[in-house]
Amino acid sequence: MLEHTLTSALPADFNRRVFLIYIAAFLALSILGLGYMLYKGKYIFLGLILAAPILILLLTQPKLAVLQYICMLFVNQRVFAEGPLLVADISGLIVVMAALFDFLFSKEELRQPPKLSLNFLALLLITFLTGIFGFSPEAAIRPFGRILLLLAIFLAIYRLSKKFSPQLCINA
Image (tube, rainbow, N blue to C red; front, side, top):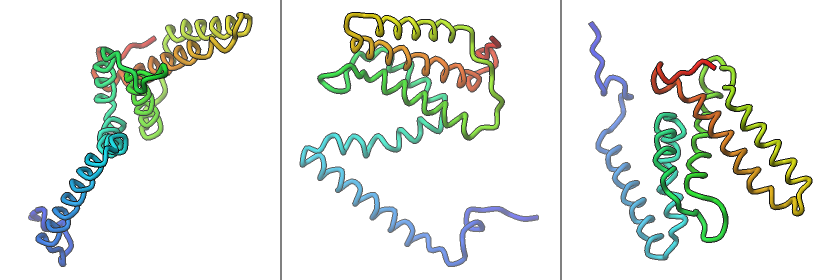
């Protein structure tokens, strides 16, 4: 009978005490670096460093990506003071990237897109035509991009819906 323990999977010359010292030194240097950035007022870099592990978690766990998108729908906050980019838009892009990762790394078969996506495509076509024949065509760029983002989010959530429960898996 074989006994599997943590020490049986580690190499024979593995020194746990040295490993813990390295981890403690890494954590101490990381905390000092984050404190230095906070002291110098480099909040954007600080936010990016802290957001990287959360982003990796959201991209690898599609359920969490969809749930954070649902929560961020109620946050009406702009990312930048000037510009149309909202926090919910960034959250939606995370859902789209999670669905893309799920598509690339899973061996599940593709489902037929839902019939509701035809409505989004018709809306895209209408927005494109009004942009072409309108008085100022550049005014249609922002609504066209917003509808395109909504279509991508809709298709991403449709793809990821089977990760939640069999009842949410809709056969269109």
